[in-house]
Image: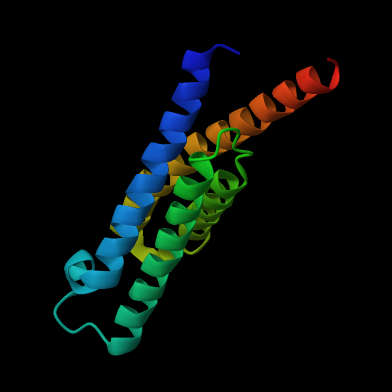
Length: 139
């Protein structure tokens, strides 16, 4: 695989990870702004859940960022994030009545591209690593 393709895989994964950290930080610090469409009366447990969701995204994002600083990343943390995004998308569809059309659309507009790009990057990073390992073993 050419180096530019490898950089693109890393760039996609890094962009998703940085977006995940930014979204997580937003959910942690100002969940009431993100959830403003629900109205002014937002119960404490809802704010706590939003913050917990933000922490989850920050951990997944930072894990991927740290992994991507390695010379030959495996893509494991990138796959963890893609799995979380896939689960978010599935949950949005399964429980769409609870989420509402606008909530489902908002969730899918974030989760589907992140899951798709995440899986693409994770598989590419894993494949690149396996290819390099096989090449090293044959020498």
